[in-house]
Length: 331
Image 1 (tube, rainbow, N blue to C red):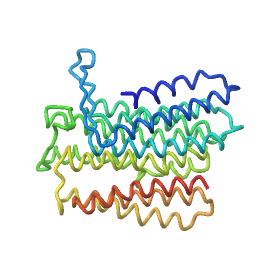
Image 2: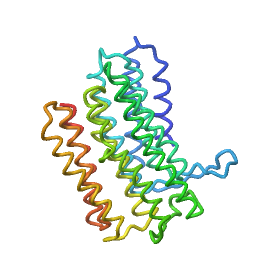
Image 3: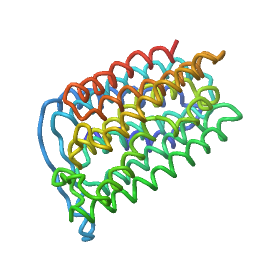
């Protein structure tokens, strides 16, 4: 649990460090992100489950570490540490430094919870935490950043409501909220509706069309490390991770099914239209934003095939794109 507690506690403490104490802020950021990376390396390829009843409500605070979640933890920690190092130099002299670092660390903590959660309600609670940290990191940018942050909050918030309805339907159909105990066939309209609603939440967080329009705005208004961290890397990890969980674990997505075709169509449309938008951009950061949007289309297309080679290809490109797109934003 230290992989959650350390960045979470450090993020909260960061807000209370006086603005003039820049070295303390930078030291805490590097310490927390490095500790998170060391813990992720230690946890990689380990397996465990942890269940704690949540205030006699019948909801369990359930966590599960296995090969997929361990891989996502390591990727998040590695990228987070590198971007934290860059932020220490780039953000010097900027306003609201402690706020940006605080939201950055909270984002790392919430990401770790999402990857480890084995309960849909717990996952959704911290999924919303990611939205709040995303809003905060955008809002501390330039004078127009609050408008971009509000736009992102509204778009993603609406799709998260769809995800909430999907979670309710999934729990109703399966009789449980424990992710590892759910594996529903897509053989009726209610199950298909639940899949679509959850899929909307996943691809929206991933930055796919038509839920993408806030990203180019954030590119020009938000602090540059945010673009490298979230649209460049973390969005893809959050969205494609959850989409893969939906398609492989929660539901039985079959090759050549109508829902498989829908996913591939969304992926293909995102690839083509976003690249066409990128071609006409004159601002480098907006160009990279549209290209980042297009790349999530390849990942959705791969998962949508419901074939092992396609899914592995989508996951490979998720990491590949996170590495090079973060680097491009930072240039």
